[in-house]
Image (cartoon, rainbow, N blue to C red):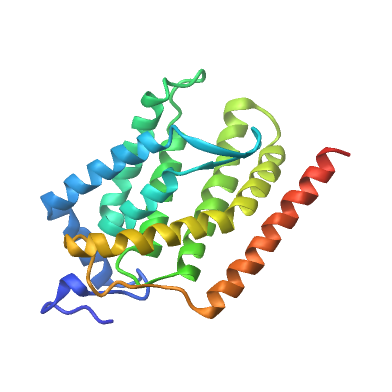
Length: 235
């Protein structure tokens, strides 16, 4: 859909690679309402980050803060998502009582990039399972696995490949579940956000037949990777 000054509030974009998209994202910085929403969702995200669901002992845990983060980014866009990422990282650090190694700015960078990626995929776009899956995949691989392994290597000194392999297994195994949770959240809350005029009425959340096939294949791959890892660890 092309950018139009007649109805900018309902403008959607296929990709973020346009000047109109940048203008739309930057315009959110001028909205006091959007700034307040950003702050509230960022605080909620930091609070939710304290809780997790163990599904495989200490090795495999599902944290739910990514749901709030993705919702925030789909609502306010990349211009506000960047400072929100820093805010969430700092709040999470202090709410968790700090860390023995102290505050590490690398994780602030990871948080900023995570929020930016979510916004680039989800802001002002029609939301399909494929798009949601791609957003979570980008975050899991680029931020959680590749960049996260660098930070752990710097902080704790073990070989990079050790963190990379364990991180890759965890993130691949959890990816289908996380994408499904994001889809369910968006299907429930996007209509609510549209009613209060925080998200354009033109945004839709759709699931096509190919999305079911795609998610089923991804789920099988994730389960297979996890089973193979556990067999390897247990000899």
